[in-house]
Length: 115
Image (cartoon, rainbow, N blue to C red):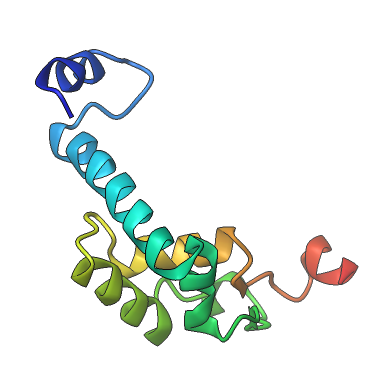
């Protein structure tokens, strides 16, 4: 990315203005494209870590919901090996939750009750 564009982004109050995170975002976009080229889709790559099926943990309360798991540790290490930045296990696990790879809705959650 051009230095001028980085400086422009550093002035944008609508984003986190941390130079390392901006550079990491650019880097991660490039790495994302590489994974997509290798696997056909990023989805195919990432869902491979859970065998293509969501993990249903069925926690009883919020204290039973982990911040990381063995799978998020493995996925984080693989992403880092591929050159991704700022991809720790906690960030990866949050992504897994947000995209439905992991269902951590507690037993009395309205979303759990709908399924």
